[in-house]
Structure formats: structure tokens, C-alpha cells
Image 1 (cartoon, rainbow, N blue to C red):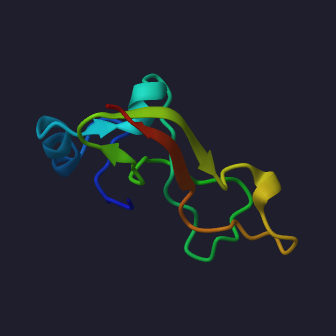
Image 2 (image 1 turned 90 degrees about the vertical axis):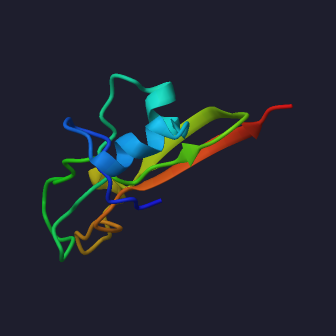
Length: 102
């Protein structure tokens, strides 16, 4: 989700803290607890030369017996820019492989 609730860098947004207090798990933090995993935000016209991602607000949160097996962030490497020099989006994409446990 594009939660607009900052998980990284510190300080964390109150909404993110509320999700964690309610028992949700942050899939990124489970697998990469010391890596920021920034997902937001490129320049509004997505034509900036260097990446401007500075916070992680795009999250995969789980609740219950769900195990995060893998997670990746897409669109952060300059090689993903279009031939015209545009980033794919103002946010990086996040995808996770999850397994529902018995």
C-alpha cells in the first residue's frame, strides 16, 4: 500500500506505529531490518537525473499467520528509466512473496 505513513527513516509516522502496535508485520523490515528500502519520491515530472527516493512509505503489511518469503523494490535503479530519461514512477514499486501458514 502507498500508506503515506513513514516507516523509514526515523522518526516513524504515528500511523505506522499504530499498525505495528495493532499486530501487523512489516514485510520489508522482517527481511531487511537494517536496510531503509526507500520508495518515495522522485521529482513530480520523474525527470530527475539521480534518484531522489528518501523515505519508505510504500508498505506490505501482513497480519496473522503469514510468512514473508521474499520482497523486492522495483524502479530504483537508473537502468529502469525510459529511453527519454524518465523514472517509471514517482514511487518505487514493492512486491512480496508471502506464504499463508497453517
